[in-house]
Image 1 (cartoon, rainbow, N blue to C red):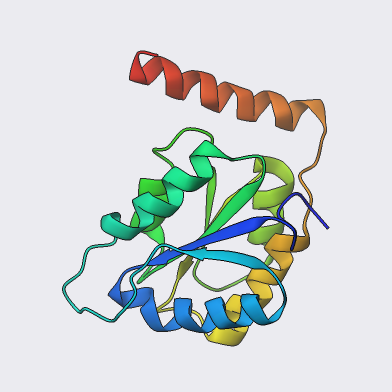
Image 2: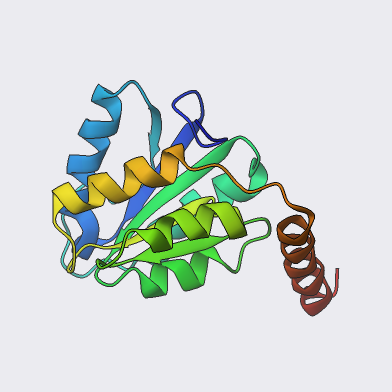
Length: 162
């Protein structure tokens, strides 16, 4: 199993659009013996805003990107991934259905440590398939993939003036 295996903490977060799916995935991961930290939403609130919750999970992974990962949920997963990708050391892959190969490539080529799921577009069963694939897929250690990820971090730091 990859770096994101059942011995690592998986951070979860969602807004109202992803709340029901997050709750189901939380129970499912816990039943599988995976350590999970839930960053909310903790109850359904139709007017909540995803940045309030996604930022907490993203911050936690940013601080420990080699030993943690996150699964975040929203209506499309797009805005959630955009926010997550603003944090250092985060590489979010979006999944809203279709070919599961995108999950595998996101891990193998980009070392994705955040999986952003579009809850309005996937069933709980499909989300579970995607999560299982994401958890078990290893990052390809070829130099070109490492180099590309290092360039992303370098550019990110330069843009922030760090």
